[in-house]
Length: 290
Image (cartoon, rainbow, N blue to C red; front, side, top):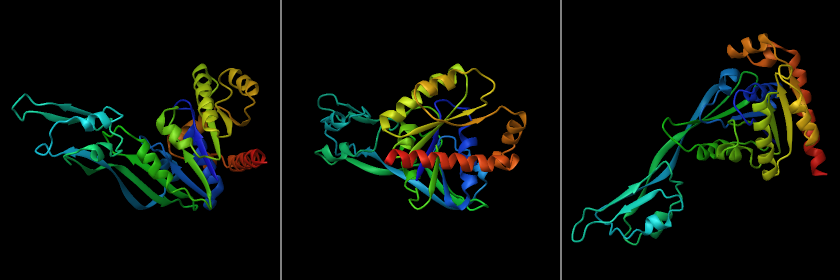
């Protein structure tokens, strides 16, 4: 089973929910942090890291001495990541420019080059770390290399460690951009964490639309439910979205969170609440398959 915890905007309590859910399940759970640009689940889970895997992708280069500046590589690139500057007549002052931030490592430029001037070299994109927590939760996180612009390949690398024999809790990055789509894709359920504010409602709408396009069943958690208005609840009722959990605003929760203390450790009564949350999610998944 794969349960992805996502949110339309940052700061709603997504990691609070995902780590609490994983810890409540113990050794039956795998926690996968796909917020690869800023992973922070480890702060609360405190895993013992036992494995570090470097992630590389092919990156094109050119042997300028072989190149005849025909431009076929640039024409083949769907992402406009190559520019060919043709030389002046009778001179060899042309050039081939690669915009690696836009390159998707598809290899088309290598295939179409008639001079075999384009080659590929390995470029490090980040790393995947694996470990286990004290209560037996398997832990996987991606960490994008600083200055790297593309996080989707690293999200894919993290998701390769999904364990089909366990309950996989995936912590997504906030928003509805490509990394989030890649994270939510192929999940059995998406748990959207929101807050009862105009921004929370607006971004919840966007996230719900995303899950519907991906055909992933969805439920909602409202964090700090008692500080805003009822617009989120009204929206969920109108759209037939189950509100599976409402967490009140408490200063003690915020203080514990700022110290890296998981919710179910600072408030043990929430362990039973999150176990019930998992049961409710399981029931919805089973009902949807009938």
